[in-house]
Length: 99
Image 1 (cartoon, one colour):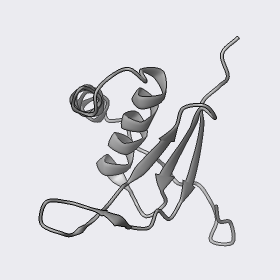
Image 2: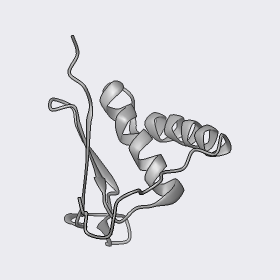
Image 3: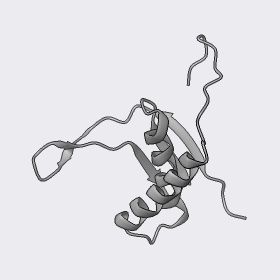
Image 4: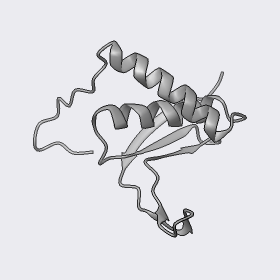
């Protein structure tokens, strides 16, 4: 049986070692660790960006042979579909609870 995917939330810092074409640090909203079947999602995200990042990282874990472009394209389609179906994340925690 395949290992279940786990999603954790935490602050993901900017990647100062790897920079984009303009010299700015790369910003990641999520990370996928295939061997651990773990997706880490930046805990500062909310709304549609949070949904997209969860879907994106899960697609990486389910389809490790897909290119980044394909994952992004498919995650965008799935996110838009779920959003149109009015999927929303509801936070039912009390003020005392935290991640």
